[in-house]
Every structure is written in C-alpha cells, then in structure tokens.
Image (cartoon, rainbow, N blue to C red; front, side):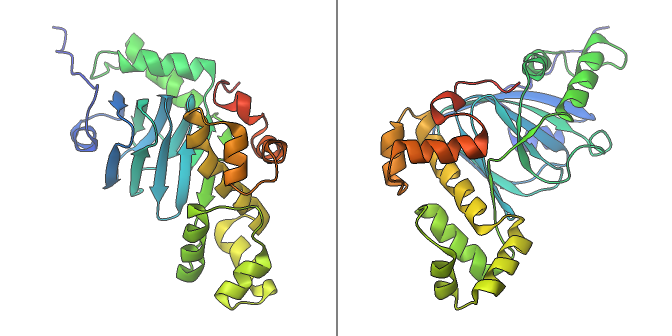
Length: 265
C-alpha cells in the first residue's frame, strides 16, 4: 500500500526535529520581519532563499542570504533567523551521517540551476522517501550537488574576545569605510600590532576585509528592497555610488545592480 503523504510545507523547527528520516525537505513562506528565535536542528540544514532576503546569526557570526543563494548550517549549531523581506524558502535537512563530507561551519553558497530544480522537486516528493525509489535518487543527487556548492563572501564573523565582539557589533549597526585600525585600537586601548594579530586570529579576516563584509551585510537587504545604490552608498559613508560598486564588485564578483537578479553558475 502507498504510504500516506506527509506535508512538509510551512512546518516549524520543532516539527522538523520530530520528523524521522535521514533526509527531510521542506518549503516555507515567511512575511517580512518574521523572526525565528534561537534554535538548533539535529540535522544539518541547507536553506535556499527562492525569493526575499534573510539573515542568520550564530555565536560565531552573521550571514546574509539573498535570493537564489543558500545558507549551510551544520547540525547542532544554535542560530536565529530574521526575514529582512518576505521570504520563500526551501530547506533540506541532512542527518550528520549523510553530511559527513559537507562543511563543518556555517556559510552562504551559490546555488546552481540543477540544485534549484532539485530543491523544487524535493519539496513536492512523497514523504517519507522509499529506498530505491525515484524520490530516493533525487535526494541522493541533491545531497551530492549541495556538497559542490561554491562559498560566497556573505558572512561577518565575530571574534571570541568579548571586547572585540562588542566593538564589531557597534560597527555592524553603523558601518563606515572611513573607520581605521587606529580608531579601533584607541577605543580598545590596544596596540596596533596586538589588535591586528588578534583580530585576524579570531575572525580569519584582515580588518579591512572584515569591514567590507560588514558593509555588504548592511547593504544587501536594502538592495533587495529596491533602494537606490547611490542612497545606500552615501548612507554607508562612501563618497560615490561608483566607489561602493567597486568595493561590491571586488568582493562579490558582480555589480550590485546585477547581483540580486543574477543566478549563480
């Protein structure tokens, strides 16, 4: 007898955790400003933003998820999610035994046309998935392709040092390309050498690269909302839209005017 189909649309994190199986595909829609409080999954999560923009925050940093990109969240990582615009999201949850070769840290990745179609197909497959069935084959290919997804520079890592982390959060609220290492050293009463060494050690980024990431983090939801690039550039402290666009292109690889409408290869 055919098993009764279980709907995996618009389900809560608690429902996902309670659902048996090595792989679970879901599809959810969220209104703008919807907030999912800190939680964790017993499986890894590959969350694909079909449309809209979301932010994901953990104790280790923040990630921005624009349309047609995805965030990878390893199993057991406590995180909160905020929808910066109305979001349509499809997720694949992978048991740690299935995701053993996948990344051990959070990251935003590009999503290929093949993964996009597989995610759409997975959202409508009969659940649970019968071993050896077409659904089982679709899911196996999807798991393989997710493991090949290229990382994109859309995270802002936080240092573990409480004073450095607090200063980083202040900067995230009002990012500006004009702040210098010397400004931060004065605020934190640290020598330039000590600050530079500790900041890179705890974030994995040079100070200037981290500041660029923070500016991108602030700009993404505004770009998604259709704000003028010139307005965003001036608000972030850039002297011109072209200066902001140059930074954006150098970091992301495409101009801001094309980014949110482009689909990764």
